[in-house]
Length: 407
Length: 134
Image 1 (cartoon, rainbow over the protein chains, first blue to last red):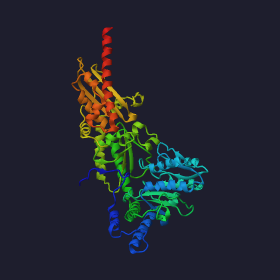
Image 2: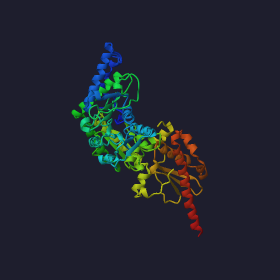
Image 3: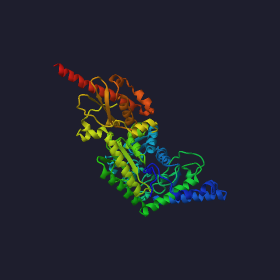
Image 4: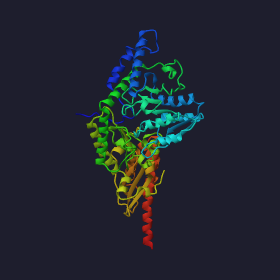
């Protein structure tokens, strides 16, 4: 059997479309091309039927009513709409929002925009495992808090928050609760009622659907939630998101949601967990001084984030060019700042520079994982032989005691 | 990061990786950078009494261009005089490797490593001369 190189192990960044998703989408490019808003002919009706079917598929994945699903251009828009849309609609009620320091930039930057317009934001810290205690959320809520937004699973370290408990705290205090579920969907069972969430962001391309489409769950039952739209026009999506629906993309998201639900039921998710565990066990058997970033217990089944001490992240990526992964190292970003998520956990900067994120996906095999272990073992040893830090540590030097000349 | 072929070549086939005896009288050792900044270079030069750099070795923790810059520097100084080594500018290294702007600091670090290694050698030499005079 041959392995296709490079091996894709970056499934938190994006996932390939499942061939079944592509197949479902194809007729909607050419054959059933109507505008779902055209009410006067069959082209429009058929497009609308497809959009509504997809709405049902997405709702079924998260235990919602189809009427509660708003299609968007992706999770960035969903996150922006949840935070800014709710903040603006309820601005008479209060101008305080609670979130965390490890949220995706789609939340953090939306919060920064609101700060410039006079809102106050509380950024909750995380503990060294990457977790937020529901009690800490409770303590941060004020009488003028209108929204709390805490991600379900983090995109870098895969740490899973206790969303049901945090949601319960918010519900009790009458504060709307939003969660960015982009990374968790399809890996953890989701029921919006049990999770006590009022708003939830969804991305298609993280669950083997197409890029350019997502959804926002907006609760209609009690408490009913309203939001101020950010796009204005034809009043599609119940007025919450104007713009002609991209029917083929929405069909793709619907099919992806259906497959994600099946993956949870048929053991597919457990299979990725076994592969992830195999990768971690294999690396630890061959290499010393590996440090896991984030909680092991409260973690997505397909995530591994490891610091390979004494090897800088970008140089690791260059050495393992047969593997497609990403790094929290500064040198892989344009800002020259190491990952803000790792820093929020209190990970030492020197270790943050050496971190690599692995995301196992639906199409990875045991053979690929074994190949990855081999490549990493060889190349980390090669880099450590070249690392003055590894040499010093092996000579018994305490790196913390050295007075380094920062530049 | 889009690197030039020269960076890739020096990264994939680094020249003169290793260590010299840092306690030897004719070896100067320079360690520059900091782990928290993501790069540390160790450059060692073996220098004859006539001031000729007979051997050069490096070990580097850092990105691809930091490793390539140190590798290149060992090639540039080998067989050369101290004066020549002292005259190497970071811009010489950056130009030779066609480093992207965001990686210029790697060449600065490499220049600093040469100066630090030579300073260490000269300090040893001065200490030896002082000991001989007393």
